[in-house]
Image (cartoon, rainbow, N blue to C red; front, side, top):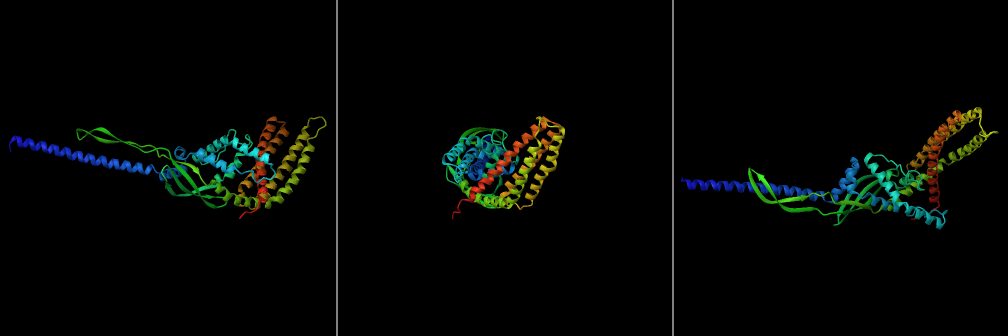
Length: 391
């Protein structure tokens, strides 16, 4: 074989090797591109978004949850459903007062919803229901935030499954199966998701060093954006409230009826003890003697506190329907808080301690908030009793 033929074969062999390498590289690029495209296709769907929402709730992943849920939009719509007709059945309110209250609820809507978002974020992150520490806690806005949360049913609602996720283009819908734990009522929430961006996929040219040689060939530049789907509304939340609330209300009415005699009997005793307590504090010169203060402290420890304990013991003997657990827990909390306030008051009496008196007053204010919450539940129950049962 002459030198020319030998060199020709060498060149042909090198070309063949280059083509084989190029073909292998193109196959590799195609495989990677297909894999990335398949990944993008799966992760850019509303199904993927709903799965991430479920996972984030289970794992306490607040960042992922907020990527896929517009919690403020959902909360504000839910707030409107919850408060829109809150006063319509209260016959004790005049039309002008009813409009005043409704306008007030609209006025404080931003603050209330911001507080609700904070509560829900904390729940997802820590697993605990914690009220905001700022203006929303208590009654600084003239509204009981804890009671509003209870009426929303959110604290006793669990997700049991997600199904029927349908993509309609720029919007998608899904069914979230839930269970209200107190009434054991199943329900299906209808939710809407929106697509907030498009998948980015651009073609470009890249320079590669492969097998010791340089290659310049078309490449793919992928823009792997986050999933663009976000849950923006719960479309039948009001229907959920209207389905479950009457069931819970019947439990509350039953519990109020079964405890009415106990409450009435002890209210009578408390009134007598209050008169005695006031009489024991009277002085001729405006200053109590140590003996008088000691007698008052003894009356608190041996009469007032035992009466409170006896009342709670009798209430604890009554069977509590599931829907009335919140009311029963409030009564128990009220008893514990009241006893604590009386204990500090008795300490203040014995030791003539201004700090103990201030502590007793502070705890008493907490008790008043709880008692007002109880009264509102009972009042709401009384209003619901006079409403006709509609078919």
